Length: 325
Length: 246
Figure 1 (spheres, one colour):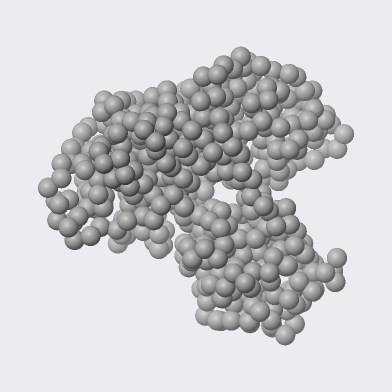
Figure 2 (cartoon, each protein chain N blue to C red):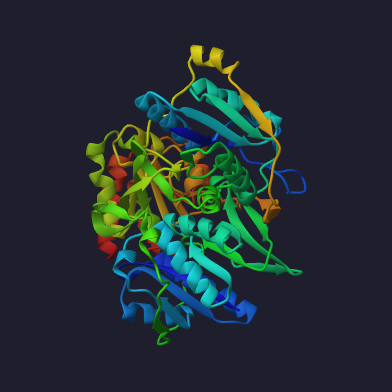
């Protein structure tokens, strides 16, 4: 019996969301009185995998098969299923990412496990029933979900668990092979296209987000958003009307039908705060709203607010951040 | 080519979410239900691909009780050819996936499409479960879908980019923007939808694997602290010293 953690790597590094997942998994292992093993997918280095010891992982399984560098749903599922069998894993923890959800859902059928996605807290053992809290209604609510059966799979929402850092602890890295065949690579990508990230901060992984709405008046004014984002080390985002008129790409659209984010800091500039947008951001720890309309509904959901013209306020904020640094 | 499009019946996106007094169920009173917005991409794209091929069928599938029929008729009005309703409340993703897999198998559908997730339960699970039950590939979430003969080219979103994937039918894809511009029904569609076949079948399989013990709303904010626009820079000091987020 053990806990298996799926760790996503990119360019040799373990993704930040996967450090959270590893920390989550090792805490679950502690609750169950067992150890946490990780299985790594993507491009990883042995040194970085060994550092997962800091998140409480004792052992890391890694298959260096080159075709596993990019995401392949079929092959990843088989690899993780094989690792779960090898470790007799009773709980499998993944990130609630596109990869985690795509793999977790297939795994749940293959391993006859119950599955909860969008998990935001450590599990509770309520009189023998295994319960987790998850986000539902697109961020408008939470649900306590009871998982049945012996085997459980949990996909943990980004930024909802603090990553552990126990300096100096290392995990043992073991090479691992799931005997993959060509049939496991039917959905292998012909091509991978990465976005050009301004400032290098990915929105789904970001701790801080600066977001713009229709109040920005046009894509030519987005440099004001980007300058503040760069000074803060933040990712940029936008509201639905903005991506609908192609001022910004769809992958920046935050809201009920876009992506849901939960950064430590969300700064909304010229966004009125429609209920669909709030659903995508209301699990952010601190929300700042800048809008010239004091009646904008977003102020009711904000921690800090400035009633003023974004074109005057944003440069002042960028300047203040630069002075602070 | 036979397309199966799975649609979910969800509260309208502007709905203020409330629960029954025991917090065990969503309070449906006064709530307008719509076709899940993500599923609209799947539906419209299936219709577009059928039109481009000049042959084939688009079947709409919903797992729900009789009150979902207005939205099934709406999907028929948008352009689906026929519909199947599995007569059961959707208990969880696993339960729903079993129904879809059984119908997909029986009807030998080539392409099974659905939205990325439903905006109420946000499971993002059904696509993979169905693919695994049928032993066919899944592409999730797909931002683009083109067909050439029985081969599909899709763009799969990954964090920070996308993968171009080619799979042969049969396959499952979960859809999201910017795949297409979702269509709305026109008058002719609404008229013809009334007479299109809607078959009702009873559920199969072994039930659900998860259940909701209790729902809760997010904690309320304490109220906004306003900073005068003239001294906007003070906000940055508050974010560092008080909120400690920068």
